[in-house]
Image: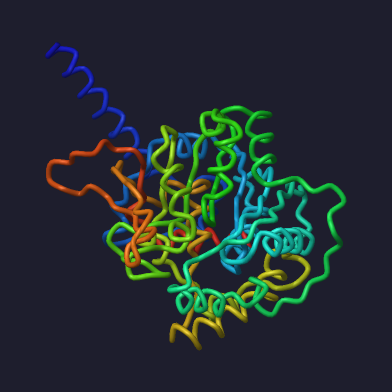
Length: 374
């Protein structure tokens, strides 16, 4: 038994050494030398994640993706990046009630895709649900609406025709997962209501996915919609608890990481906004509202790229450092509804059930964003 243990130890050491040597090599073809990130300080010591997304990334495989979203300006930015990222094969974008109602989310997704007109159009999933939130959070949710506007897309005016063939979000997610078992990653940018519904209809749904990446929660950062909770967890804590405690391959992108990367107006202003860059043209229509809203309501000169950070966790996982952790969700309580509770005691009594991103190369996220827009 001791000999077997030594062999495993030497094997792990050899893998770590090989991985370290790859980090020192020149950047891959999709990162030209002029776009390569020169990282110094603590970020230079980020570990390369060795997992299902990192392995595919090293092979140069476009990762098949479903985005479940409640757009939201930030969500719209992430969809735009996903449509033009050569490392992403965006199969479907599904609507969920959250930042806006289900019908508005459905309409926003359609407007985003039509305005981007990407080379490959993803399938669109629709929702008719309205999200019911406790009345005592009205002030906090109002701030969320102020940052995104009544329609969710700021003051961007759009005209879209009604879809002839509507596909309900949960059903579309199940259909895509079944058509490509163990090949599709699900990225959730809103509440986990659709994922819970898909699991109720198809108990094998999560096991058919390659993995789930959830934007939401907080480890030590605190909340955004309440002192204790992040909005996506708060909006439907029962769904969040059901999904995050399920036996599936899951990665959480908490506020501790997602709130760290910001885009300044100067950086935005330097991006192309002509017809030669469909993503740049679209962002030029929706982001000015976000810059004004962040300045007016938060006193911040810049906007957070939380949703782009969550997307990068799939297509550029080498920019992150992660750790297995044990999480549970508080489903009740006036002050704690939606809080993500992690067992961080010296001797944990809970079993690890999720991979949590704890550190990020923020300059790498900005370079990924600008490189894709260009």
